Amino acid sequence: MAKRIIILNGSPRKNGNTAELIKSFIKGALEAGNTVAEFFLNEMDIHGCLGCFGGGKNPESPCVQKDDMLKIYPEYQAADVVVLASPLYYWTVSGQLKTAFDRLFAVAECNKDYINPKKECVLLMAAEGNGFKESVYWYDNLMKHLKWKTLDKVLCGDVMAIGDIAERKELSYAYELGKSIK
Image (cartoon, rainbow, N blue to C red):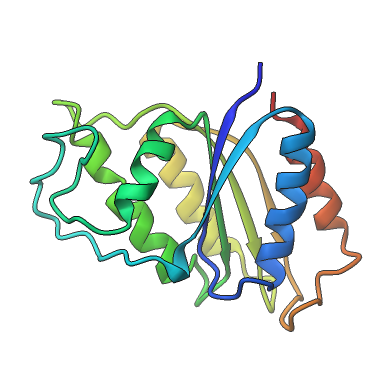
């Protein structure tokens, strides 16, 4: 059965190496019959979490802040698979991705026990170097906390300039990963 996939693109570059990983993943996911919604976070007005515990009163508008997260919440709630895509910034995900993901807590607040909706997840990352250890640590612990299933990670190092990722095996792997989701 086809799945609904949401991609949170935390890269500031629309045509960068992270974007190429996403394009390959989407191509495979669409060929497998899935639906995909991608959000380019850098161009969205998303404020940081206030830590106010004031959300969760309205599932259609779970957060007290009214910004572009209102576009993401319905897609996130309906999604079977969440793709976290980011360049490696100071050994972790970009601020754009972290900010948006933190705001998803408002959806958990819709449950009296703060239980997050069950999802499957993918991590796509590109980096100048190969220091993914801290990002993988963060991601793996996040998955444990949320009780989400990791489908896989695609980590592509040694790609700094736009286009460096061309011909890399990680693009094929992202495509095959997208295609494997059914």
